Amino acid sequence: MTTLHHEIRVIFGDTDQMGIVYYANYYRYFEGARAAYLRDMGRSYKDMAEWGVALPVVESHCKYISPGHYEDLLDVQTTVTEIRGASLRFSYRICRETELLVEGYTVHACAHPETGRVRRIPPELRALLEESHESS
Image (cartoon, rainbow, N blue to C red):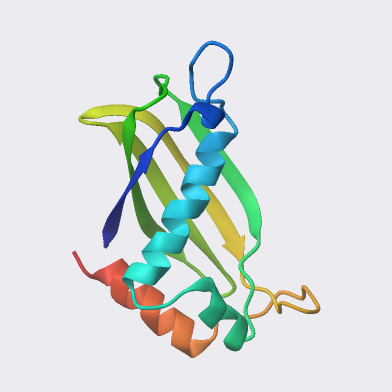
């Protein structure tokens, strides 16, 4: 499985009044890393639209282990850990240097972008995901 390392610097606006990363912002970090993962494979969410695909999140989980702070440089590690007929799962680990702060996942349905109807993952996307899923 290919793991992409995507760096994010915590900005002041990502923190709460205690100077700690506001919990919901980790989902934004997941999203940014997911988009970077696709770009790293030579594609983007724009390509998904051309293939008649939207990838809405249908399930998510985030386990908070240790707080992130303003100015921290975070490493968001992203891996495709499951590919099914009409869905896939991205798993994430967010670290500050070697310290694990957060781990989680998002499950995405493959849907038609205009109708929202669930559909099978198209061959072009499946090949791309399976290539990254199988490589080390």
